[in-house]
Image (tube, rainbow, N blue to C red; front, side):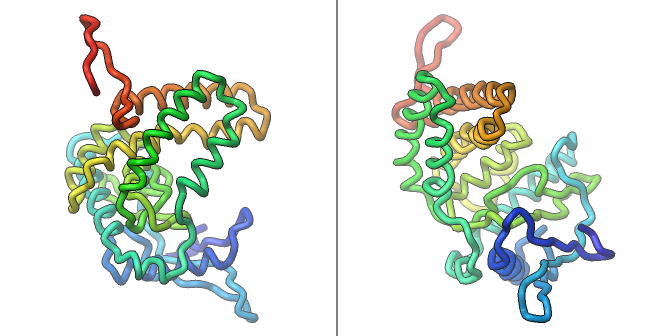
Length: 277
């Protein structure tokens, strides 16, 4: 919530106070490291007995980018600023980031694989086979991925923009971790097109490893698993069916774009010949 010139975040939903402390230390590291658009003047508020109560940082004047239509110069400005932010974030020394005590870690094994197993009973035989095929081909790519500081939850809810398309702030670093930079690239695809991601990458100040965009395709293909898991837990059959359809489309699209590595599915041309993707 906003209090004057400050944003105050109070732990909720079972968020441990230690996570809040780590997030404050991380934000302070980002500010010292000159990462643009990261929250400034972050502080931890404690009770009289030293128990962490909340964190604060300077209010950021901007609106969530989700749903905001950008054209021309504003679109390019946002892509350039986002590419610059991700480049600076991924450049923060891993050792210094680990020293903040940030949570997260191996999201693939701690989040994605358990999620796949939890959703498996709701997928059906064909989708299960396609998903397993994609996962089996993806894991060797993941083993070769570099490890950097990632935000872990890039989306239009967490990127704040101004009227000119400038990136004013990136918030909610509670899922930050040392991980695959492709996670943050995939996050761009939560709200924006692949063409826009291409513009972000054009402004990214480092050389991406050659498999980064392929891994990003897999991460975004698997994103409907989160909605599917929630729908299953709530018994919402309509939402479950929608999430399953979205997952099926995403998995097949990832395979067709090369997300399954050497096991990619060939595509048909208009004449019916088959070419490798």
